[in-house]
Image (cartoon, rainbow, N blue to C red; front, side, top):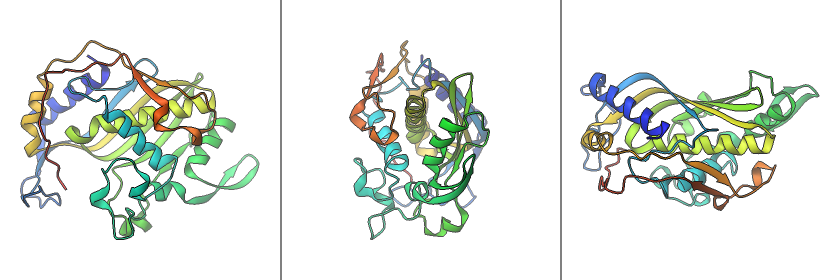
Amino acid sequence: MTEADKNFIETCKEIIEKGYSSEGTGVRTRWEDGAEANYISIVGVTNKYDVGKEFPMITLRNNTNTVKKAIDEILWIWQKKSNKIDDLNSHIWDQWAGEDGTIGKAYGYQMAKKYKFKTKEGIKEMDQVDFVLYLLNNDSASRRILTNIFVHEDLKDMNLEPCAYSTQWLVKEGKLHLILNQRSQDMLAANGWNTMQYAALLCMFAQVTGLKVGTLTHNIGDCHIYDRHIPLVKKLINGQAMDVHPKLVIHNPTKNFYDFKVEDFEIQGYDYNKEMNLGKIPVAE
């Protein structure tokens, strides 16, 4: 099995065996039929992936097409710095769009905001993405290479507060490492999605800064499985994982982050359990 399979199985087992129930706490989320979308959860999960050795893809079910959609979303946020759903090729954000066709002051909107940063050459104005790239190229020993999109003054204007809200980038012995902090994680619907897209972002940033790919550390505050997902998760973690080591290949030698396109990415060495069929997965809203 892959490292992603191992982390997913171990985390889900811990949630099922030791998790806290949300019943009676007045949860916000609802199922399509209006029923409360309760869940069981654990607090403070850390999963680590050596992306330089293996791209983190779950083989317990098919992620062949999912990975491209996940990369498309990360480019929408970090490269296009957009909050407009029409700039995204999938429809995963449609339910959160307002009348103006945006998701409010969330995600890409925050990445596009410019700030005045201290640099070795003096004060420079740029957005968070460009500041990360600037520091990786000009001050890679820094332990202050961070981004944050959980901006309290703008929360009231966000159609959904960010789940994955901050990153830290560290360079050690020529390798680029990424720490992703996430306030809340739906294990069935989003865990594999988030690890794939941020691992891809790590590979992109490593390429454009001339660094080797290191690790992705994924810190999750509230890690949960929704009540109607529990039977599906049990079926999944009891299935057969594949003995493969996926690799992300980028067919674009660019040193400019803004030149990457979804079609530049290819997964090699991936296989999945073709007997696994979860059917339509209910989505909590």
